[in-house]
Length: 175
Image (cartoon, rainbow, N blue to C red; front, side, top):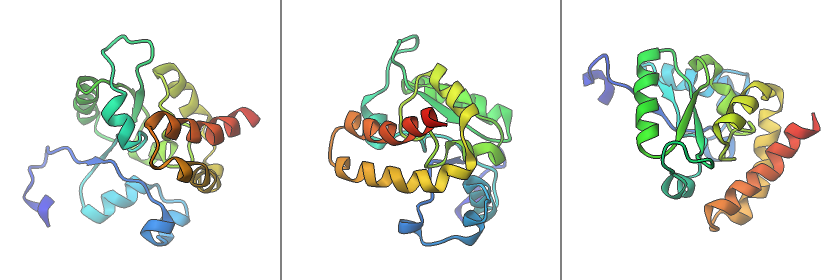
């Protein structure tokens, strides 16, 4: 395996997201195991979960200088504090704020279906919404947002963000 030759201090970033319709059903995930914990078990290395909550088009176009009022924030989860600090510096350099979202076991808060997923929150919104994530609604919300997103898949990133917000933030406001 490729990672067997990597140094112990090499930071592995998990940017992936589980979609059963694309990836096939993974029973451990369907039964509640956090996606990135599953990834760690598969590759035998700890990971830092980041960059999974922003559409690729937004990643290319939404970066802003530090201090910008509309700067998008990204959650970072992981068990290694030093690695998270290094990744936060990288995120800042590419034009985004970051928020420490906890351990890798807590990274379910940034999985598809969460209000922080593909909604391009500000730092303040991200901090608030991470606290309000309802784990029991993630799978249902993931499916709802896919239906809203699908018509925007070829649109600009703002339309994609609005599709996600129309489902996920309205869900959050209805609780």
